[in-house]
Image (cartoon, rainbow, N blue to C red):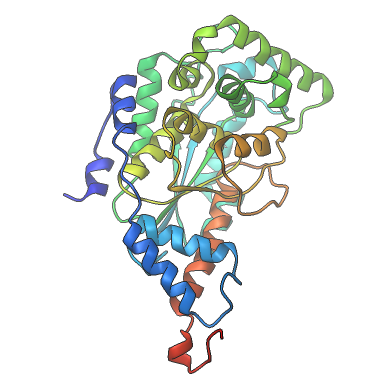
Length: 346
C-alpha cells in the first residue's frame, strides 16, 4: 500500500496522536527539487525571469518527488459546517445560508464550480453535521476534544490516492469570527487586530464581533495553552477538517494550496504546533480580511496573488491551480538552450 493510501485510511482519536504525527512529518524530496532547479537554469530564458512560476515548479517537484511535476489530477476540497457563534449576530447572513450554498455547490452554480471546470479540477464538498452547529464559543468551547479530533480525522480522509495538488476551502456562516478568535488565541495582540467585515457587516456588527472575541478569550484562558485547545475552543468543524487534510497531505507528500483567511487560520494551528509543518503549502491569495496579511506574516508565507477576493469556498485556491498549471507547462514544455540551439548566458 502506498503512503497516500495509508494516510487516506488513517484515523486519529486524540490530540496526543496528532502531536505524535507532527513529530514525524516527512520532508520534501531534495533530489527532485535540485533536479528541477537545475532544469530551470537550462531553459531558454534569463535565470529567474519567470519569478514565482519557477519557484512553484520547484516546489511541486519537491513534494511530488519528480523533477518534472505534473498537474493532471488536481483536487479541490470544500468543507462546510455551521457555527454556534452565528447566534450572536456576527454575520450579515443567517446560518441557513451554509446549507443553501452547499446545495448550490452540488447544483454547480457557485464560483468554485466554474473555476474547477476551468482548471479541470475534481470538486468534493464535505458537509459536516450542518444541522448541529458547534457550541457558541462565547459561552462554551466550540467542540469537545473528541468532536475536534473526529473532524480532523474526517478531513484527513479527503486526501485520496493519486492527487497531484490539493486546493482547500470552506463554507460556514460565522467562520471569519471563528478564524479571528483562533488567530487571536494563537498569536496574541488585540481582538481588533484580527477582526474584519466577513460577509460585509456594518460598523455595529463589526464592533459586536470584536467584543465577542475579546470576551471569549478572557473567559477561556486554557485555550492559549495548546494550539489544538485553541482550535477546539474557537474553531469550527470545517476548520478542524482543513487542519486534518493539511496534515494528511503532508504525510502523503501532496502539495497543498490554501484559500483565504479562514483556511489559513486553520493551517496556522499546525504551524504553531511544529515548525515547518506548512512547508508543503502555498497560500493562494491575500483576502481583504485585514487579519489575513498579518496572519501570513506570522506564519512566514507570501500569497501568490492579491485580487481583493473574500468569497471563501476554495475559490482563490482553485484559481491558483491555474497558476500552478502555468508553472508546470513552462517548466516541462520549454526548450533548453542546448536543445533549441540558443546561446546561453555568457
